[in-house]
Image 1 (cartoon, rainbow, N blue to C red):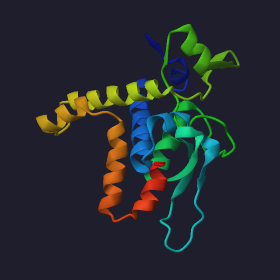
Image 2 (cartoon, helix red, strand yellow):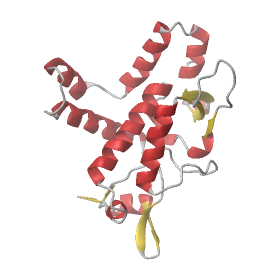
Image 3 (cartoon, rainbow, N blue to C red):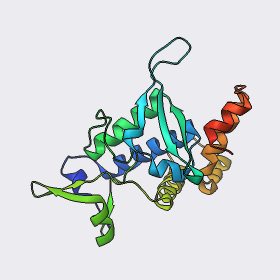
Length: 201
């Protein structure tokens, strides 16, 4: 059974924090075309705002990702993805505005009551448990996203068709990468630019 002591101590509701985490994960993957392995390894110290200049959308940030064959590349995130990450970091009790932190962009907010998970994700400060900011494993991030999509599909308060609900129940997070690429092509992004953003050889 999960323990949410770090959240309860700050009066943050665990289900809400989980949804905010999932939203940040969806926007990170969907707006950048990142693979889940890359998103799981993304750190705050590799994220910075793009200097404002003519032709660059306001609020754009760049993120260095380590991809396949340990190759680094730069992807870009819009303001709404950054806002979702800031909210997720507030739930964690971490200061997003400190750019030098080697903390994961996405980190669990509800920690399973296993010795291994608690050793990895919790430390103690002033006698109270605090989240350490360690990242997900790629499989853990996959589980978070698929579980959240199933919950959305099963939410009767949302006006979704049965076909949409069925699709959400069976879609894999890799579809966010495909969606990013499809939108890029539809917006006439040059093929060589898209190739670099996706990290294709």
